[in-house]
Length: 76
Image (cartoon, rainbow, N blue to C red):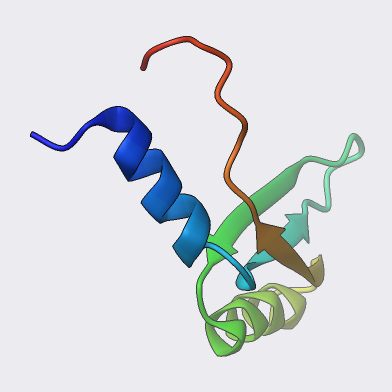
């Protein structure tokens, strides 16, 4: 089994300049609700947003950078 500390250091080395795209769709209800989905492809996020717009909903695409969280000493 690989030590947790080694796994963490490998993940930090390989998670530089890693991005995800979030599509956010706002419902048409009086009190709006938001549906957010994470996509690893910009094209997939754009298509999801366009489908929502085609249904008359507000939608946007948000580019996010992924970063490893600091170790807080807890275990999953």
